[in-house]
Length: 282
Image (cartoon, rainbow, N blue to C red; front, top):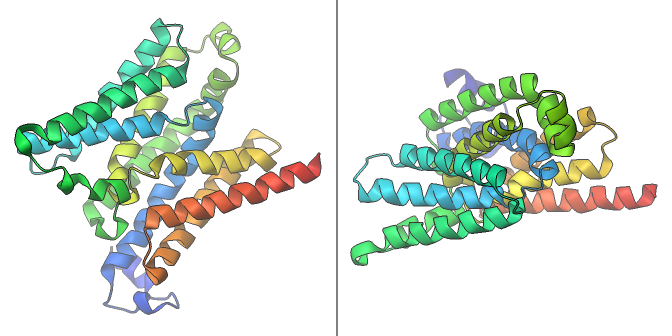
């Protein structure tokens, strides 16, 4: 981390002065790790028409945190990660075994998860207020250990994308063709859903449950407006997530707004700009 702090000290900002505001420097590093994760996954979230899946995963992660708190765990994050992965696998299995549309299955799981989370967190008259911070998030509270964990997840996601991107994209666009070419559709979906589950759960505390779904949808949706091929699609989604992530952090610091909300609003502006560019091309 000392090398990172030395690099940040070179930036022309008051908070970047040596020996000061380490929370902001940590937050910037967290954004640089989290944003590429959202940018990479956003394209497949859009192509799989799973825009609200991350929302449902956030609810299951909240339930996991509530269970961990009731069980007296010092760090309930791992309980949330475990429950989110189980949730993602169950979702994949139900979609595979039923003829219901994915948005219907997402609605069933999402409503069940949030109801269970509220039920557990308020059991025996407990107060729900201690979970309020999850709704908005606070990236300034991110720890160095969690940044390292997210960096590891980013490395694993990059490896997954390197080896499975083509088959995952084909599975999303044309499942029948993918199946005819020997692609294991269930395994592809399970891997992708579990990856989203881990990313959403680990970043929910800092980004906020209210906007985390938007961060997984807007980069890919904006890139789709102007991209001419899959390479541009992925690159533009990645760049939008990173640039708006950094800009949103700066905006939130200087005007005192929520970081997650600031990033989301900038991504929304970018989406409408790319949409207007798309309309001009017609």
